[in-house]
Length: 95
Image 1 (tube, rainbow, N blue to C red):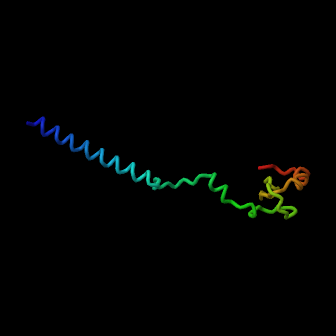
Image 2 (cartoon, helix red, strand yellow; image 1 turned 60 degrees about the vertical axis):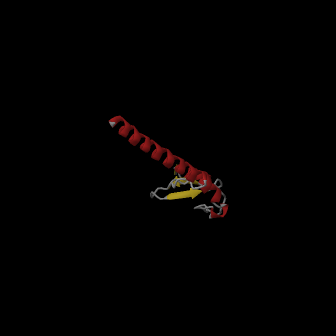
Image 3 (cartoon, rainbow, N blue to C red; image 1 turned 90 degrees about the vertical axis):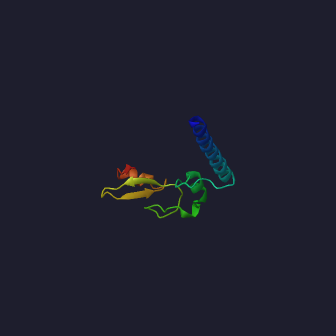
C-alpha cells in the first residue's frame, strides 16, 4: 500500500514538472525572449551615427578616427592623422 501511494506522488510530481516545462518552452517560442541586461555591441554600433564624430583637439576638424595622446599636464588630446606630427614633435605618449 505504501508503495502505491509513493508511486502516485512520484507520478504526480513528474506530470506537474512536464506540464510546466512544456508551458515555458511555448512562451519562449512565441517571441518573449528571457529578459537580459546585456546589450549586444553589434546592435549598438549599428545605431551609432557617424555624425557624432569628435573634432580633433588641435585643428578642430572632424576627420573621422582620432588617436588619443597624453599631454604634459596629464590631460588627454584626441588628434587626427594630420596632427600626429605635432604629437611626435612634442613627445606625447599615445594611449
